[in-house]
Length: 150
Image (cartoon, rainbow, N blue to C red):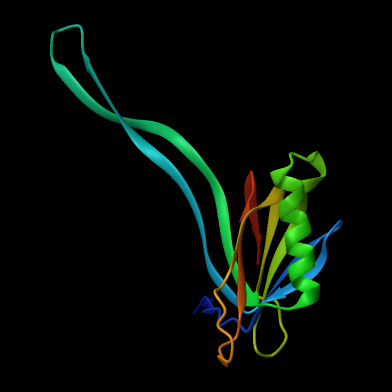
C-alpha cells in the first residue's frame, strides 16, 4: 500500500511584496495574477489544394499582479515613488522581488518570484469627508516572468 499526498488548499491572510530597493510592503488582498497568450488563427492551402485551419501562438501579455491595501503614509509613499520611477522611464524601476502568501498561522505556503517587475498602475479609492469607510490603494505589478516556489 502506498501513501498518497494530497494538495493543501491555500487560505491566505496576508501578502508581502519584497524588493531590494522598495523594502517589504504588506497587502490585505490579492486581486489576481494574470498572464495571457492569444490564439492566432492561421489558414493555408496544402500542396493538394485543401484549406487547413490551425491555431498558433499569438501576442503575449506579460504577467500582471493586482494587490490592494489600506491607505497609509508608509506604504503609500513607497508605492507612489516606485510607480513614479516607472512613469519617468527610470531603469531602476524594474527589479526582481517576491510576493509571499502568508496563511493565518504565519506559514508561507507559496512564494512567487517576480523577474524584472515594476509598478505599472496605481489607484487610490475615492474618499468622502465624514465617511467611515477605509481608503485603499490598489496597484498593478507587471513583470517579465513569474516563478512559483511552493
